[in-house]
Amino acid sequence: MATRTETDVDVVAGDPAQRRLHRVGVGILEIVPDAVEDRGVRNLKDNLSDRVCALLVAIIATAQAADVVTTYRALAGHGYVENNPLLRELIARSPVGAFTVKVLMIFAVVLLVLSRLRGQRTRVALVIAAAISLTAPLLNIALMMRS
Image 1 (cartoon, rainbow, N blue to C red):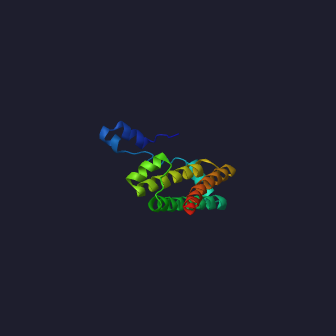
Image 2: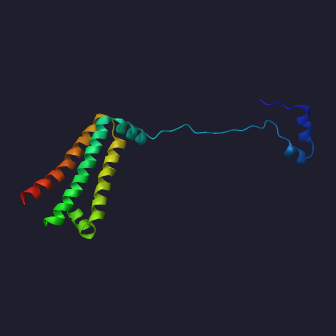
Image 3: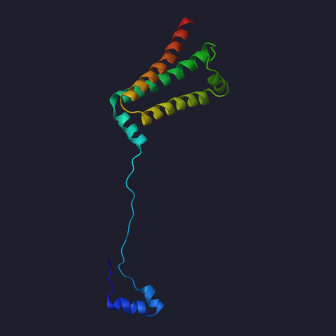
């Protein structure tokens, strides 16, 4: 609790200009909020530091690249038609744009899995995604080998 001294009383009782100029107990108050770590970012860091998850993400990336290459070769050289109706329309307009949209959507889902799930659930989701991702290039290769 602050107490007043005789000089404080004199200044307060004095003229208003002196009252404004007189400072008592000047200090700096800094309010800093507690550091809040985003749980999604922490999950993402933890999952990417896990070797199994990192390997599964690499498998998914490789499978998606193989799918783009094999799909492009099948459509360009063998007269095949894309069976996915959404991608078929995009490929007709811009093959590069279609493949870019496809890969970005896949990695948005992978990023969502990595940031929202933890532990064994992340691994299970990535194993399923890797298995699905591997089927497309394998089916494309099998289709091109038959013709």
